[in-house]
Image 1 (cartoon, helix red, strand yellow):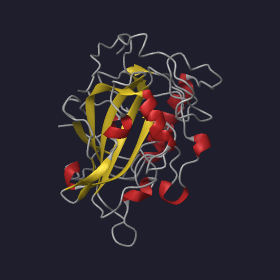
Image 2 (spheres, rainbow, N blue to C red):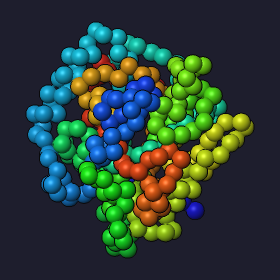
Image 3 (cartoon, one colour):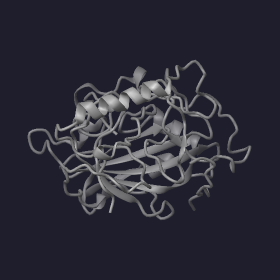
Length: 313
């Protein structure tokens, strides 16, 4: 049975071109990830652990540049956003992609620190280095036990920018495409070259807290891929205890779009609840998975400019 965190917040997270969440706005389809540059360190209290932390002025300048670089240029609504704030005035509207069950799962990856903000993951991790590392939002972990927060044996999903530790918040992106594709590495797997290079895209986004507890959710199980009704699916993706997802139209994400607009259209379903997942199972997934993912991705600044947000019904 899923163990879910009951959240009581004390305060107050895809891709790259041409598919969805990029750390740098580069194309995963052609270049892949730069493993040495695609991680963040959003651990509680980890902000000064050898990582640069930029001032509010830097983030404000990035927001200003984003506004200037998108004004009157026809960019559609952007992501990520606060899912509890429903207003938006971006005039460009496109149809929601079909339900994910009618699409093919094409990629799964995760971000350290939630890219989106919601009632149950609303604590700001800080500005980080201004390039997506050591930022985003996390859930309240005050109710976690000493056992759940016990240090792991060895480093988990380690990189030059980030290592997962118990208590970290991650946002998992289950990316779906209307193209006839096979799930695989990078978001280029969401395209069917020479057949359908402009598919509709949908992301089911779920937020988890990683804990040192073998009884929590098994990451390998909840990311297991199979076929249902002829479509590739994450057959064990939890939904029952994750709440009713917030659906909105937006874009690809990743810190490569902190100062420029993403031109890609994505339908988002962001689940509002937070679940616990066993950190050791995440570590095993990082060691071997069909998506060739071995690290946490960086996050894009939360989009707050109403001219770059869609209205949520």
